[in-house]
Length: 392
Image (cartoon, helix red, strand yellow):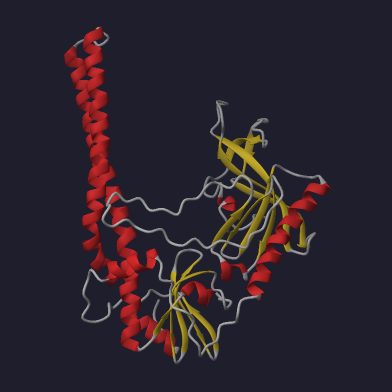
């Protein structure tokens, strides 16, 4: 069997296919090559594990690039894993990781526009839990994966791995238990008035709407034209710097070649430098285009979402809620996270992204929780609130 590719570690090797590969130990000591699958799981134990967590204890392997020159491109890497599904964790956090080798994460967005920098979005973290050294643990959309590098067989280390996973699961369960349950008839607090929120509201005000946008895509398209100006400036600056650096390097190479006689002739060197600069110019243009698009999307999408949500709320007499608070207080039938939440006489309605990035709408009403995978539009929101079927 193979464990589902539900977390970053479990997605390693996905799509590589069967390859001839070495088996790499945690210390990168390579063993003889043979044909190996891209991912493979060998279950050691399933059910209730030491510490009380219910899940799977297994050896899991995946193929990755081989280190060093051994004539092959692939190496098989192994780990010992505890895999468990914790739907309650989806209330608290979409992604979280624990362990001494966890990479540094910076919640920043690149911007050279000093007049309008992009504030970082708040980072949702899991409960504070310390795991033993050598154990890495990650949670993504209600799935927990704890691991130790290598195929571990020592009973004490296997027990420690299971108990570390159980400790995190228990901490999540305790935190969820302390959350108040979501009341259908009562709205929760509005989104926090922080720097990110103020920046979004100010950005949404850059376009005047006589009536609410018909859908999320229409709203984003309107702000793309506004945001493109800032993105174009960033792309041109960095693309120009890239080209300037290449030109200086080429000029230095030309000067050195002529002075030392290393090149066959100044003409040959000039041709080489010209070719290099042409390639650098094309690369700089691509850098400019890519950065412009990234900068544009980083603005247009949150501004468009704000315009769509607030416009719909005003037109229907609804209250805008903090989506994080709403999500913490109920179990969604669809794993993922809420990006916006509204409340009215018929209960709560959330714009939802599932764990595959698909859009949907989740409603919490007197008759229960309902979820539909559908694009975000005024028609879809109206249909979801009235329980009218709508085409996805």
